[in-house]
Image 1 (cartoon, helix red, strand yellow):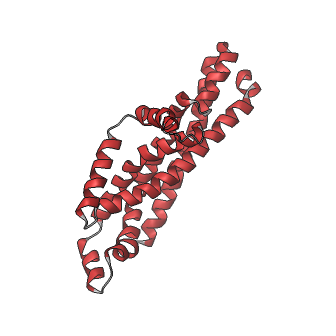
Image 2: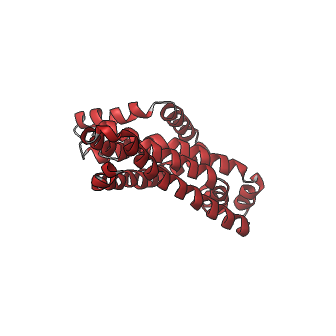
Length: 215
């Protein structure tokens, strides 16, 4: 483990960048996913069509291709804020349809009578969704959403192939320095990932119990 201890600053830097990608892309995917889910159930046909096409295309496109587009084509189009930001954009776009589908399943799980009752007292589509349907839907889909964010945590490793120094980038650099300790280095990386994913799972369990009590 001396290879890990000696290079702990590199691992911590990679871990910090991994957490940064997770938080920023997670927030972005949640916001974009809510928008896409809203469009999927919109009474406007063009919105539904756009959201459906977006979801099917992005969800069935490999993450590597999405990040390749962000890392190489966006700079070619004169947008180059840095590889970390470009990776965040790619992860946000890739994760958003999974968030949207999780939310849509929750929305479909809310009894249709709730929406009809809201419309009968004069609430608009936006008000019905915001104040009646969405709060109930979010409670139903907390476990699936946490699973999406756990998958996002692991997907941040792909950003290492596109010049972002995250955990696997740190592991690659330390391996070049200490090739005799590959197993210990990989175990250290796995421990960092487990720290995030297990924590997310525990948070999901606590939130789910609280939501169950509120119901």
